[in-house]
Length: 142
Image (cartoon, rainbow, N blue to C red):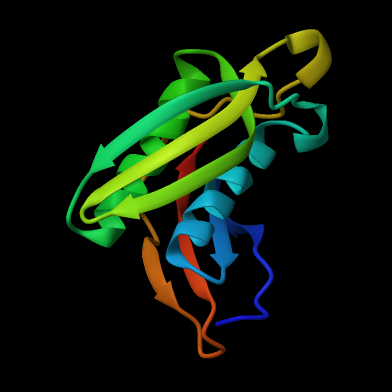
């Protein structure tokens, strides 16, 4: 899988937003999905990744782990009012260990385009593309 560049993208799903992370590893795909989620809210370039947060998710099923991971990111954004522009995800058995770097939401600087309510399991996928890149995607309720 070497040579695959990690990236994210959005796709349409009715009134909701699909987020898709693509990377050389599953962990990288999970990181990119979280970046796609943040980019749906505001411009990533406006976020200063100065404050670290840690997130632990324990789930043996990989697809459910993705949902729990994105829900943890949504919680940090919606409840704790944080925005993130950098993620580091590591799997240790059934556990996802992540560090998130960002800053508190400042509506004068960040101007959110949507308010995220939660990640849903619609269109959930964790797997590999034919070219060997890893993909993590789901729909975000906005």
